[in-house]
Structures are given as C-alpha cells and as structure tokens.
Length: 171
Image (cartoon, rainbow, N blue to C red):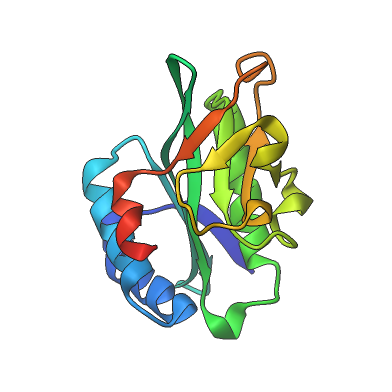
C-alpha cells in the first residue's frame, strides 16, 4: 500500500536517491536540496511503500510576469518515482495530493514543464492557450503547461511563466 505524506527531515537522503535514480543524474536532486533551503513555503510530498520512500513531488513558488504586474502561484517540479515503482500510479497519487493541497491553499495556478501526454489528465493545458509562455527559450509549447485554479485572478492575464532561479541549473 502506498501512502502520501509531507517530507520529514529524515527523508532528505532518500528523496535525493529517488530523484537521482528517476532522472539518471543528480541535477534534479541538487535543485531539490537548494529549494528546500530557500523555499520554506514550498510543499514536498513523498510516496511511501513499506517504510521505503519510492516517490517525491515538489511544489515551489512560481510567477507569471504580466503587463505591469506579477502573480504568484506554484510550480510543480520535480516529480520522481523510483524506476522499479513506475507505472503503478504512484506519480498520479503524488500529483493529485499535491494539487489538492494547492487548491486548499487557494493558489491561483500551478505551472509544470513536463510530458504533454501525462499532465493533461490532471487538468493541465498548454500555458500558451492562456497567453503565458515559458521563460526558457528551448521549451516546446506543448511541454509548458498550466493548471488554472482561480480563473478570476488569471482573467485577461498574459505574460511569462517563471520557475525559481534554482531550476536554471537543471535546464
């Protein structure tokens, strides 16, 4: 049975292992470690199976810079599941729990840079459909997505979606 809970201090090294193994490199794990230090308002969730951390998701502040204004929401990244546990719905459970927390916290939006065939099942759409483009030039339009949780706050907003600067190291 898989349980989802908030990260605890004792989870730091296992989270690092999950991200490194899931991505085949340490770049994402390094970003998570940096974000943990600078984003106390972030939300870090883990998936646990028989006392082993098998998945991790992180939400940290993200911005939309629009004409003369900045709107803060959250960015989803990274989402990681140990390779031997992939394909069992663990990532989906992490996303669902995280998005429920974002709704409860009344976040206006969540940005994600990810697989365009995976994230739409959670309500994400291409951000360009809202007039929001990625700050990264090399990102395909279909991979930069948004889940709008407060249509009123994002009404007639267009601009540039930005993750925390710590993500640049992983790009």
